[in-house]
Length: 511
Image (cartoon, rainbow, N blue to C red; front, side, top):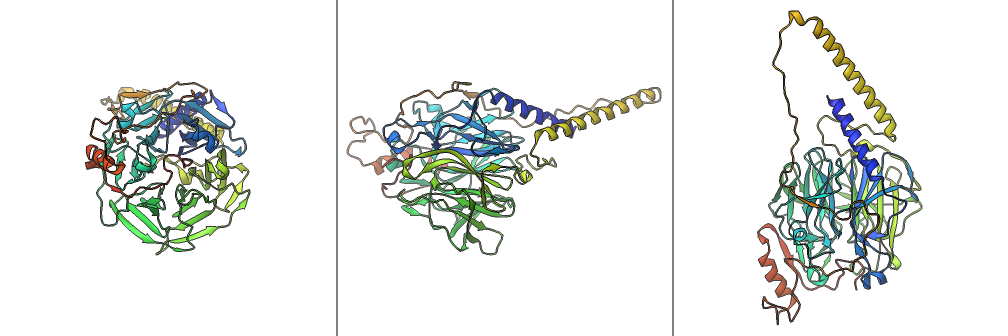
């Protein structure tokens, strides 16, 4: 039955891939502020700011995207022509997170972010959606949970063996970036995706300060490592590594030694199978210095140690607001915002065994990043689906031949045997009964509808002067924001209000 279950899952996944291939694009539009995650043997990328230059964004022509991209990473491909599969469906969003969950980690989990359409109160109140990759329905299910204050520029990780997500930090989802950056969340939420349960984790003396534009990476030891970002009114020192133990539900802080990378924000990070965290890119506090270096944090030492890696091959341009995904022993960098006020639509492959940038992707050690929950089911690393399918078919045929033989043996002994009551096992997997709301936009469309970018609005939005029915006249932004925070679900949120900052937050290209 185990082989049959694996074969059924494989067939279902293959069918979904074939359906998604109905729209195939060589290279997607340039973007930044998107989110990426590995699920089984596919890299999924969703949303982001779609545009090319800063000038375009200042003229309000850049759009929050609802594009779902998929790339098969079990096969080799050229970095210049990876063979993206794409569809447009779901909310238009940027600066969100994308993680995985479900009974077999088959769900994409989208949380938070900046939404282009502020009139949809359903999104602002419940910005948590599930997308079943084994289902061809092309819809995102609203989880229907009360999540606390809507946020963006936060982080998310998945504890694979339990299908549990952890969300940390971020800033409020409001239209004015200067106001938004003054409130920095330090709360940690836990989402049980098998049972659709959401809970706020307790704080302790080692809980990090509120922050955003940081990274969070979970390793096989069940610990989440929080690195860098922007906190209060400055960048976080890269020697300060905050560690959350998901097993004991406790925070710790470590001081890392070695050659420290420069403090930064909007960088990316991945975890390796042998206890290391690799970071790439980022930007300084004023967005005028971009980084393209690769640094490695070794967490296996008694004291954490940083090292700066000299990479070989064609080094990609420095960038920020991009994504990095660990696929076996390859780190896949996707898109991002570059110097000279341009965004990128390319991907880059770093072989972390040699720290060489590759022109062609070759799957290596995919078992290291197997996303199927640990339940005695292993996924063999392979660079070809044909071999996997053939092996599964042979296994299924052997299984039914064995059953047939046992049945014939049973018939021969029928007269001297007794009948037992049939055993019935439902084998039902946990399901989310609350997911009654669907979100679908132009399913199957091949183009994003050009819409003007609307101002954001939420329960935290600051009213404009002259329109205040809440007594906003004569009050500064900080006072209004504090009042709105008091009206929000503050019992589920820990946050810090800091002085006004001229920093760009919602868009890397605002002045």
